[in-house]
Image (cartoon, rainbow, N blue to C red; front, side):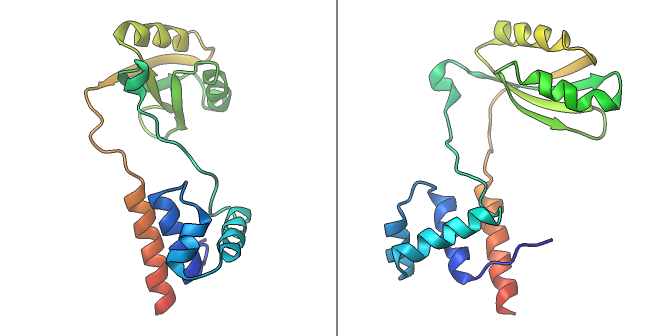
Length: 164
């Protein structure tokens, strides 16, 4: 079900997509509305679940975590998948764990310092009860990581639908 938002909400979201830390006073000036309006609109968008939160983008290389590893996980039984994902939370290097359909039951993203560190994390992963095996892919370079384009496209599409 598509959540309907009006023109002002759309414009606020577009501003926040570009800069989630942009002060409401600046957004209000740019949209020619009051700061209170922006504040109330954002609060309502949060209450509706349209805005789930705000995030920060970290350059892991600056902290010595220069290796990104994707791991496909084979599991013994399908009903153990959620327990395995829960167990993966004890490994801080696992930054994403998705329940999957297809070759793997779970697909993970790891951030590691180097291949030795990745090997240690993989061995710890394979000790988790219910994991039958893993398949690993080492990323050479992250060339595209941008959800802003999709979010802008969704908001623009909603604005266009509202006009018709």
